[in-house]
Length: 468
Image 1 (cartoon, rainbow, N blue to C red):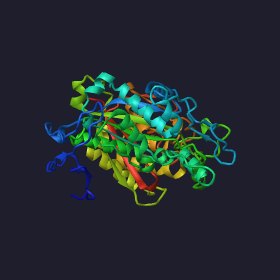
Image 2 (tube, rainbow, N blue to C red):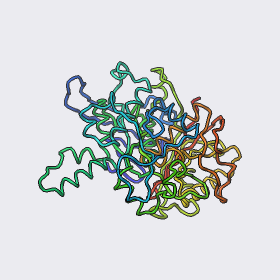
Image 3 (cartoon, one colour):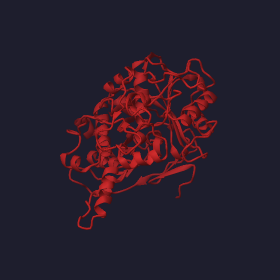
Image 4 (cartoon, rainbow, N blue to C red):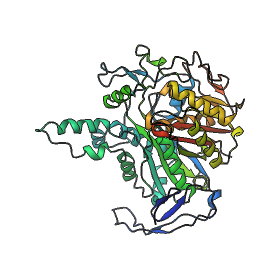
């Protein structure tokens, strides 16, 4: 059976893009795998149709994070609420020849206790961030060793993406290849591939459900979250780890972005002032490193095991803006379509959304066009509050959507939304009444949206709400 533009093919299941379609047919998928010591043989797997698909719900039960602002979600969000910037001068390599010498660099990080010492010596930082955040999400979700043993591993999956994978390892491999007397490291290719972090996490956990990555540039995390939730909505899995990871503070990537003229370079002497979404003096992106991982779970499954539930995942959308390789449509057509489809998928009216964590990368064009799209979609809703986490984290590439989803979930949990720092002189085309100011604000969130709009026209919007 071939996949079409309106369906995904996973094993022998046909999964329609609109989960509310009542005419979906289910297909059994039978497979046999050789036994491993301590593992049971899997003989069959099929969607759980005991609960009608339109009534199945997806919730967030665990969070794992690695960022310049902290390596646990409480510290991370406390720093956001205080308006603390994670942007600093780059110290890990010589960037004297680059026009931008700043970034969201992770200064203190340890994978001890989360990753084996052997792998920690071999792996790229993106993989270490991913593995650590993924296992922290499980721990945060109450998946102890005892609980993990009882999970049906054929119904647990992983979709954690990366835009650039192991840049450092790939560069080392290229350097070795140009030196005739040296033999390349046999692990270079697998450990530089952007699918391998998700794969190794599944191998470590023994999870046998869906495991793949999506690379949609800056929209990678959101697309991974949507894909992972789809498996739960369709009854194929009980829980999914999803999100993104990147370690983009590397000369190859920064040099390439500098040639595209999108990096901030006017605040090298005062890095914390560099990322300034919607401000008149914004001059470009500040790259950050990190990872964010969510543990998504089917609601009834989470209730049965007594899990703590942070928020409900309502749905979302990913669409294409075919206007330009690196620029959104001047009127934000692709962004508007994305947000409207996300609202329709979630069954939410636009007036019900009162908080948006915007993409807002601190570029002249991107910030303005997203704001125009917000006005078109939400009609100057007086209750709407909008902020951008990138003012403090920088742009974390594939990780940015998951990290900002975590900020969105923490806003729901705490009732506080973080400030927009460096918004000293709002762009005249922006309605500053919608934008959160320099201090945190109290907000009883009804429905929250998190946007990620990427190079290539990869647009994605996802929605969360308090659990009811």
